[in-house]
Amino acid sequence: MGDYTLYQPLTRTDRVTVRIYRTSIALTCLLLVALAAVLAVSPAIGAGRASIYFDLFLGLLYFAVGLSVFFIHLYIGSFKRKLIGLYFISLAALAVVFIKGGGDALSFISGVTASALLFLPLAGCMGFVAAKEAFCFRLAEGYLLAIAMPLYLFAFATGGLGRYGIESGLLFIAALYVLFASRKVFMPLHCDIGDKSAYR
Image 1 (cartoon, rainbow, N blue to C red):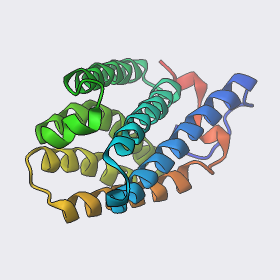
Image 2 (image 1 turned 120 degrees about the horizontal axis):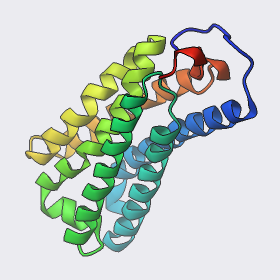
Image 3 (image 1 turned 60 degrees about the vertical axis):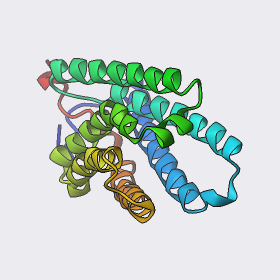
Image 4 (image 1 turned 45 degrees about the vertical axis):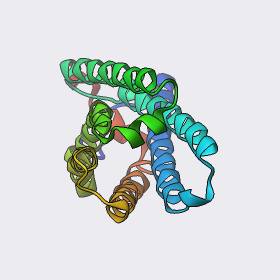
């Protein structure tokens, strides 16, 4: 993996799994852009509606990242198993958010900023996907995403970001993801499969 060589014809399964993987990256991108846009106009949204939208956003984001995790093509199987394990940890952390918030994730995060650390496993999954693509296809923004997302969560959790910092930090991450997704999603499908003989 990591080059544009067509090593063997793609099977129907290859094409389906790559398309699902690429779709998950595009969906993650759209969700981050939507969150950044909504955050910029959030005063116009009522608290109750904001909570509902945020819960929906979280559900869709975890779904999209889950697709990336389960359909990513990796030569080393142990890496994928560890990534899947991290994703299940992220789901457990999300359950804590909803349980502690009484079903209202937004109010819990707003009231207990340190709870943002519970999203680190998800950021780890997203960062792994971005860094893997950066390594394979020289998408430098993937490395930046892998660093920026956990740093943003740490800064938010410790109260190191004011309103402007929260908005601009998320906008920066969303912009990086747009660049990343636009360069990744339109690659030839066979790039994600690579040389099947190297899988282990």
